[in-house]
Image (cartoon, rainbow, N blue to C red; front, side, top):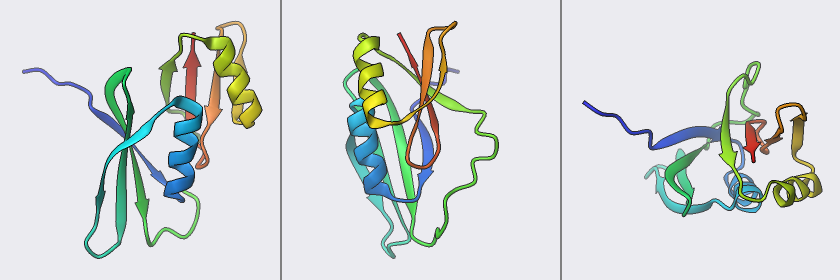
Length: 120
């Protein structure tokens, strides 16, 4: 028996704001979406050509406050082929939330508070 990781889900307060962030910050674009017939939720799947792994963003109509992420001790990680350019972009976007210079990595934070690690 084999298992393949296919996606990670993040619940988001504003779907379009999150889609725009992930497109600008990480080059992810929407590849498909599912919408509830009653309008209670929308699920957007984001991906890029570098991997078949997808980020699933779920918007819930009845959520009226930011999601509680607890201590936020979880994250996705992205490897980049141009660390300096990525760092410059994320610095300009104002989304770098933590840097570990000794390890040579940094983290960005999305509009809902999720952390994403950037690795050279």
